[in-house]
Image (cartoon, rainbow, N blue to C red; front, side, top):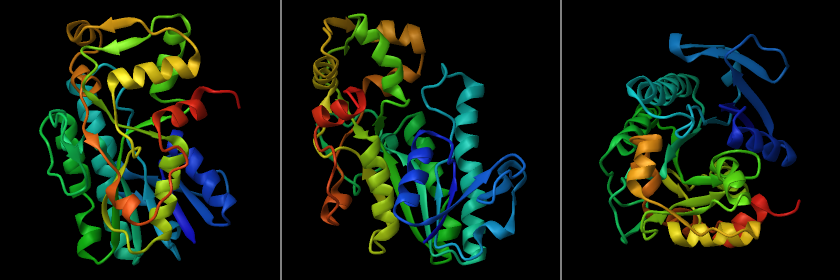
Length: 297
């Protein structure tokens, strides 16, 4: 296939480019600077500008654009950036895919589509949208693909959990704390913590690209949901470090503000669509995922 990727320089995008090329696919990358390589095409989503050559002959577009959810403390300006960096590029790509007749669009989304207050309920792709900032962001992000859907494009919405990787993301922030013996659960620890290994996040996207029967939302989450306390114990074991502390909810709110609500609570989401379609997880348990992410290479 010829696959065009927006957001190819991030944690997931970098790994996806490598995986697709290993499998023999042609990858083109959309960049927001002058193109500097034969596989690059310049675009400017803020101005709705896209080099028309990029989509010629493309079999699929993958959109992974978006500022990091946990990169900064949230304020009004950063929350707007989180929205603009996702919804605006999706608007542009959905329209371009529809106009160019590209058959498939795989678009990012998040497991927090379902909200933070789902408790112990098992959440699959048929569950309704939740409430709160991230749930609304994910809903609007997905809605921005509608021009492609209306044009008959196969649209896959990848509702991604926390991605576990040695190369970045949340673990890069937690790793030094646990090595210092400062790890611990958040609040009661009974709240659910949706997760997926980087290998399986990439694997899920490649699976969606190569299985035309899949469309609509897919939960990119590990198949064995865990609570925050279970995640904490598993990370301590993977690092062979104690994790005795408890971070109270009010302390986390003082540290990171509104973001704490999304860190403290998550849906008990399962990847029903992927499993029903026959996807086999490389890391089906939190222990396996963490061993791959923080263990010896």
